[in-house]
Image (cartoon, rainbow over all chains, first blue to last red; front, top):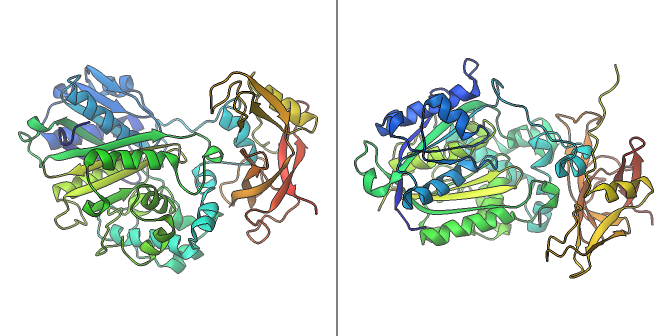
Length: 379
Length: 137
């Protein structure tokens, strides 16, 4: 895909984040969509392309009253929205549609109008993982981390520091769910969830949503907000079964998606001013730093422990507080994208000064899928 | 009220040979007749070279502990926490999820790369699960 041909011209989250007991999941989609439409200065009738995950495009389009000529229902977990951005950019460039709305919403905490997760007993997961006691993401997502730690010489304290650094970012963000400062000792003394991970190394469970509006870069200058251009994109999938990853020392899906986006963007790691790495659990930023090629895996733990990703550090990471401290409705990728867009617009709560390039990397399922979007505010 | 049971697999035509094997004390894998690739989970073609000529064989049942978590909460139905959810690397190459029995469910006892051997736990007349225990000797 060609660089900087498509831009984000509308971006918004739901009016509230956290616990939203007065809205169904479908209405959360609408709340986010209407906020993004207003942000872009558009009408719903201007939207001719639509993408969402979990809910189907017919469900959300009908609810909103949208009549699209292009839809994408790619649903590969929390990074689905990165894939939607990539697909939407291609659709706009090839003329399939002009103005795309991407929505995410999840009543992850209140569970209103949300189907519970179900693993059929005759699926491969149902036959070869569920019988051994996996029960929700905390029992699955951390399974690779002990091997990763042994291979790369990563310590429990270094991984605890991921949560500490992100809480420092969250403290600067009025919309973050958790703002109280924490220490490495607090993390390592918090309630055990699935060894080696404790409560403060696991994401929050909240309600919320977000929406993005994309159009061609040539049209973007006529919109009220500062355009944020799509500089590079990548995507991949590996396996729905965490036990069947090629290796636990890295993520194959990350290693495909990330470098694809860097190559397309034509940038090096030193060009990156701002970084989001989807942190459903505290080990993901370490995988991301290694798999995206920022540094050898062996250095990722010490890099974070040394404070390089905290406020004032040389590589600002997860500056909204991340899934660990900002919010996590279940499919967090949309919120990572929203923070990258805010940083590129220059309006983030914890704004990185003069940031021009933002890398936003997402995961879906338990390392099952991945999507990477590189944004810039310069064309 | 009966205690909630652990999730029970339901075989498909492609996996039936595996579950037939565990019932008679065999851990069955598949090998490609064309490229010799050994793979799991079951399917009637080679995921490496796409050949449909594949054979089922009885694996050694030996392997080592590749990685694990010790799950505390929430616990799956039929499990008493804390319990380890392990991934075993079989001597033949493939990995599979399982549980480690006859071993304390602690980080001290569960050492990565420790040698394991298969043990079979019968759930009912149709399903027997492959579990693993520390290898003897």
